[in-house]
Image (tube, rainbow, N blue to C red; front, side, top):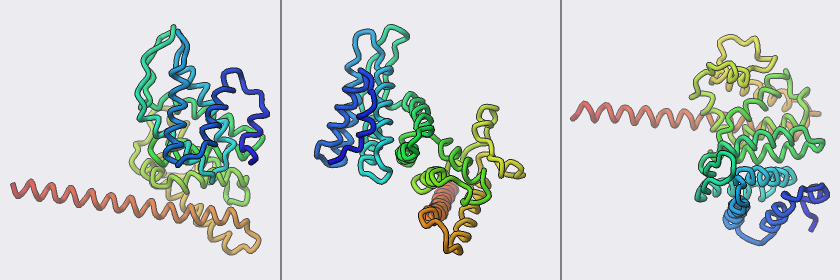
Length: 298
């Protein structure tokens, strides 16, 4: 069987990375159920961090481990079962016992519940693969990130916003969007529409300049009036863009069917997210009404 990691195996892994890669690869290829595999991968990560030498920070080991993990994920196709296994492994990781403080310089406990360190590494490693010559690496890493965000393990709210901005908000038509950019943007909506919608409708507008820059509009949306950076109005503009492109592509016999298929799925997911949001609002209103009535009757 041809290894998915042959390109990675051909690279010069560092002395620290090679044993980590060998162990994680062996775990992936060992026959097991998805849940068992996820737990094994999680245990592998903890094992490496526990193996820190005297005076060595487990967080520094985790940084090396995550570099290898993301390099491996970049080699795993978006629709491969190992993508799901890795996403479940990170979920399992949050249930692991924290590691006590170690290291010579400002030792700190390594808590698996706190995903701050993971998300810092995630941002850096994602950017690295985004610039790779093999664009499939960026697609694969994005699919993994979207799985984590959809599951609630990470709060990388700005990741989908940035990719949607770089496509929908920078182009009048899907025809001018690079194919891989379109795939990446739609992957977020296909997997995470519910979370994106909830974030856009329940998050206050940014007040810090740094946050405003992070949320800024793309050039095609920059002149929009009355649209908040984090708002349902912005979500609606994305939806209108996709619906317009859906209609255009459906009437074009030369249209790229792969792009059309993705856009059809996006429109469907966006409508479903809105329906779920309305359902949740209705339940909340009903609960509030019942509480008021009960209070009156007491």
